[in-house]
Length: 536
Ligand code: GLN
Image (cartoon, rainbow, N blue to C red; front, top):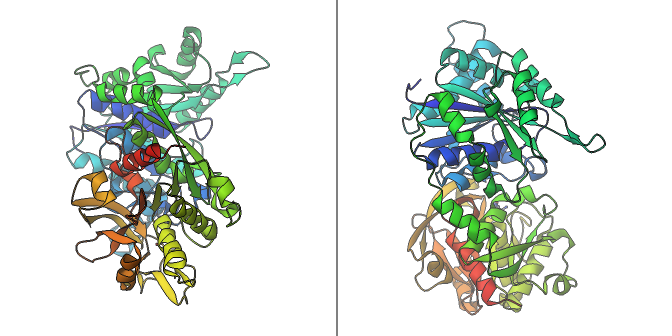
């Protein structure tokens, strides 16, 4: 273990969805703002190798890193808060731990030993935690353990934490997130669930250093003292975590609770300066005092589950602040859009975004939405499948190829305007085999996309198997849809535009993954500006 790196473990008790990811990201932000280089890692106790094959209904959005890892959506929060890139090493699952141990066993690396959960699985977990520290780039690694303490599947992780606390006691601490519920009938906050959650952690040999208590009401000094007494922590290490109106408030709320100071004290690190949150605060002040407002429709098939489009939602928040603009997202179900009701449903929108996705459900609604945006000069942004729908729509209704489709849905289409990438043709496994991660894209100078980025070469992240069929480029361009961005090595068409339209851009990549608080994404900002100019 690198003796200069310190480790903060974040665990959760009482209930899931307490916001460990946001607390971890907020703590990391405060430490970073004090001058400590910090990263965050998420350990997910499920057996899937990664969430890439999971249905969004199960796990929300699948976030993609520059190096092509398909990861938990918490990594998106980490990047958005810290403005620092994450990688494959920042998200580990039980599946990956077991796969690695089993591979080692097959190679004979355990020298005839019986391979067991303890020590082999726990050693592998520790190895993965320490691998980030060993890079030598980080002063502090925050490791968030997914799930709730007490779950059978998270036991080996808590055991790995216990061992690390024992082996490197000066360099590791535990922040435990719990819930202090309010019982309306009694008119009281109740600390018992927190006491029990800590007891459960103690049974596993782990004494938390800091308790972060989610609550809807103020946690007064008496309650803090009570929790402190029952849970063996100092009263100042009982942190109140109140519900916030925006996740971006949480770093400031945690600063007010002095979470970062307590963490540094427990880790034996100096406080350095006070956190420099100038940019963060100016972002928040713009966010809370918008001068304009736009209405943008997000057309997708998972709109009842907003987590499925987490990064797009956040990119709108960041991009809006670039123009002092509040973006009202109208979540519109692609399943429910038809040729006949599209006018009524989309009429009041200033801009239309057609979301990424897979499979045939909702496709015809997405195509109807594109047609409506194109014909009515409404600013349009199509992302991945959204861009592919824009291509299909243009082929059908402008070029006149009624059979035009993507081979993902119509494998025998006579006009396969979206086709399987060459590199995908012999792939059989579903997991981790898409075109993933960041690729370069060269932009045509006379284009909306170039105006947005003001750069000739960009690097954006991908997650797809199908692509614009470049056999048809000439025909599309003749009719007015131009390929304005291409991969310089493979020639794959990554961006299409209709120059005769006020703002119509389709991108094969996912710009939303790279938007952060401190660097709002230029394409989202440009789309919002175009929607603002078109305001009804
Ligand atoms: N299903 C499409 C493909 O695989 C689009 C993927 C996406 O929108 N992420 O190419």
